[in-house]
Image 1 (spheres, rainbow, N blue to C red):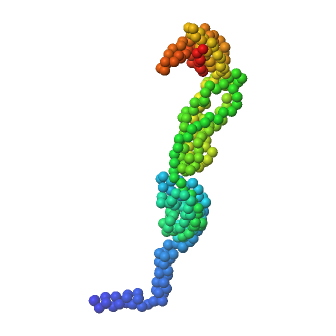
Image 2: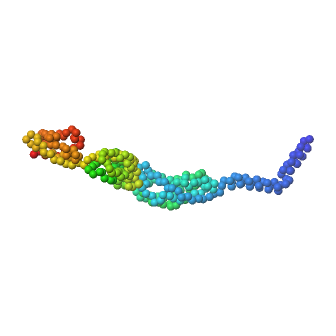
Image 3: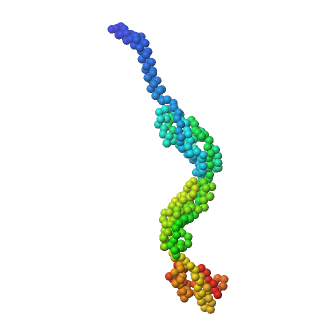
Length: 299
């Protein structure tokens, strides 16, 4: 029985290894070819592609890029074909660290080693054009700038603005290059119309602008208050004070000044801190806030 089993085993081995060996060799080659295609070729072909992308320069915290000769650069990448096909150029940017870059005008060298680009795994940056660009870096500065109200139109006849318009806030901080910030001495509002105005008013949320768009304004609107009334005139009064006369010049709205009489004004001569005579006037209570005492003289 054992002999029969041995003979059967030999027959099977002969069938496997010795018979139809040519066919088996072909099958082995096909199997190897399939393995090669799956394990090697499936890794993808190597490809190269060019993109035009945005250039981002990142200076130190206390610095600012004031000028660069180009806004975009052309990059060339190489890698697995299927990975490159997934790239969208709008999502790419070339980032350059300028934290150690000097203040002033310089030439910046762009190399695959000196820049950063977010690329898929298996894709690498191999070239940039242009490879040299001019860059200007300045110190970052902040400054409070006075705001001026810009007016247009005319008040009705017989009316005027009392004093300067009150602007809130009166100053606005601006930021940017130290050179540019130093050159700005005033900010201006959009034009505010005075047409037909006969009384006090507040122009609210008026935009403020700066001529140089490389300077940043921290607050872009202000409120502007106007005090408007009848045109003012000067009028001189001779007022008796004991044996002396006080000549007083008053300034105020035409109607109030015209109605005011010398008898309505109390003049008193007193000694000042230097021992000299000094005139003091007391106006009627109802006009004290509207009429200004310009000057006095004792005769």
